[in-house]
Length: 353
Image 1: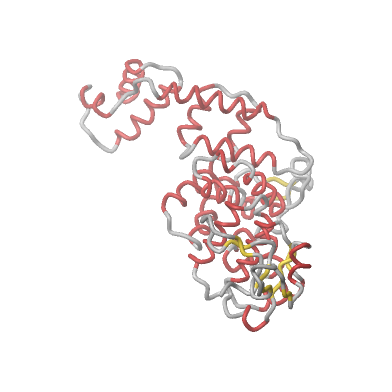
Image 2 (image 1 turned 30 degrees about the vertical axis):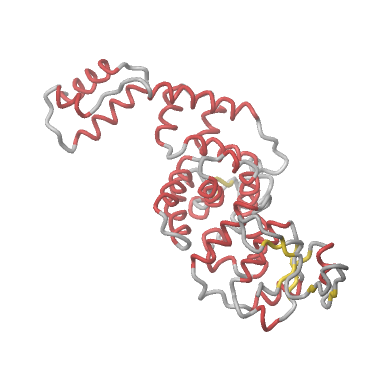
């Protein structure tokens, strides 16, 4: 049996090339030849109106995951949920759901919807956003400087960024992780936002305060080490690309930026989504072009020989805890334009001081 929901079209199995079902418990086709439809519940009317509605209070409540399934189907099908279904969802206890099942529904909303924001907005409307997404829910009502964010609070901005990211995810190296980074990118504003005596709102340290909040949010849903490392890194770096592009930063800075990123290509896309997630603020395409040009410069730079641990040993140094620091300094010099031999000499000279 399928869930007692009817919607425009529900796939029997996501990702498989199987027939789509246009009915869920309420539509029946008794005659395959004539195609006569017996519609006991007004499902055809709802299908035309793109309305998701449950047909049985009792059976719908048998599985609390249906709250999240309804939200992700609404996001994927660009549908709305009937008021009585929303009211029933609000009464259901979702606390005993496994995080794996919730994460599966989240993943479908993030990867299969043009507007994943609908998923979160419906959960908030049903009163179920905070159970599995408390860090995201905490963004509601957190103010932003209207000069830079005319769209409203941080939650609204985040929803716009998630939708902007959905339009870019087919270009991402790691689409699901990219979407999760878009969702978590501004979580730090909850702790970092301050209102000055002039009334101006700012949150300059939110990439730093956002790292532990992003990890906390993700661990409620998954233990995937790559996902957590990717998202936390993106949160820490997400403000830098656009700032460097706007100020036409020197090559050393952009090289260091991309070297610190777990996925420079996706970082560029995230910076675009972040800049796009602002009401009535068109994106400046020159920013992305600058960043892609600088990424090519970074790739060319790292292809040239750099100082290695063996170089330090050959220079007479014994391997130790300071090797990591010495190699990091040599890498910085390399990004400044120094050749391998020049960087090695400089590192050794600085060490002797």
